[in-house]
Length: 129
Image (cartoon, rainbow, N blue to C red):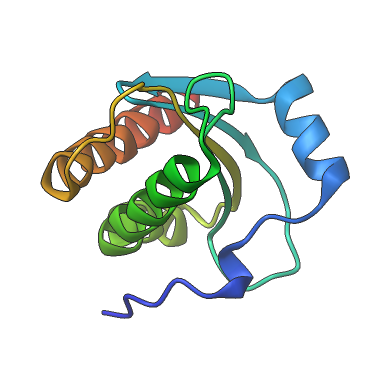
């Protein structure tokens, strides 16, 4: 099982991010709100992701950076849940993850919450098809 989370997982396309908010759907599992859009991608990874910690909620840049770092680690550890499903169904997703809590949660809590978020996303994808 590959647990790397390299540059190919990073969503950089401004057009795709804009269409994600215009046409995409969302899933909420506190402290996350996940916007997603099924699309065809030339990259050989099942999903690409942006992680956001809004300035309105977390005022200090060092807090936002720490939150994004911890969330990225939680996603890296649990990405296999989503990757296995997407490779089975032969889909690719664009994801925009927003961290909505004022407090910084522990790594264990974020691990559990990210697992819950991925299972909710998979359930929603299965119900739509």
